[in-house]
Image 1 (cartoon, helix red, strand yellow):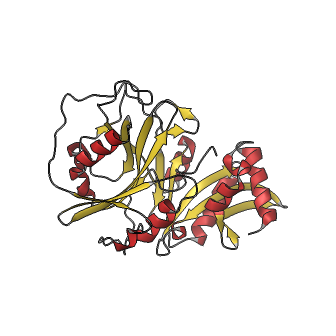
Image 2: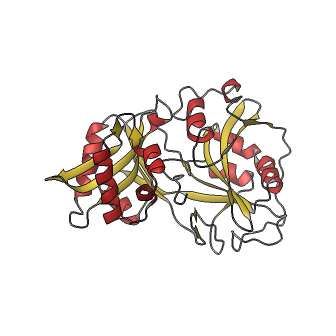
Image 3: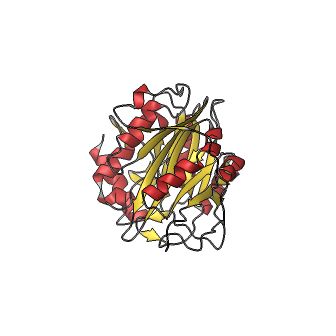
Length: 321
């Protein structure tokens, strides 16, 4: 890794994004996301040694060598050369011409630009399951409280996955972008957060769920960060998630996604987020308002299925350490 280039990129972020950005302040975070063996995962557009734009990316192969997806994670242009960012993007597409390119957490402006150059774009859907045992809610505001949830008493198999047992489970993910190695490297070996991973199975239907608990001063929330498997398993998961948030004293569990069958979520008693309910998406620091998460992707590989979750790209990158 070029220390000289890294310092130039950090100074560029400092000057064109935020002086106190986590990538400026914390070398461990910078290296974790953008250091790849001998190289930095950045496309840089410069002239006469001066950086005009940068595009930081996370190759899916960071967690699974078979992955054919590149995640755009940081896209910044100099205020003096705003169109330079398109040159960085063009360089990325040429370098990874046979890879799928995706981005999560776009600004409205970036979404419009990518739409113009033939990226497919959209907005993530935000669902939640409320813990009715909580008497006073501090994180969620104005939740919709159903008088009675439909209960599916179907017996399901549940197993918490750890570093010790994850390689012994019976689930075929070998041809998936997200396989056992992916879940181990990205979540069980994560240096910043603690994740809980569960295998849920009903007959021949199974799926893996990744959950992170958010701890605040006076309350807790749970988030489904990632998923892989047969999405039909969600239909049978309501009791598990209800028990999980009650046991861990969480106000709710939310599930930000795109590509999951909405009927399965309804059957599992998940509510779609809509006014007047407010569920924060940013916790470092806590911002008590709803935030739309935009995505974009360009499919260059037939095996790519556009399903996106909160854990994709750099959306789980810490902002405070």
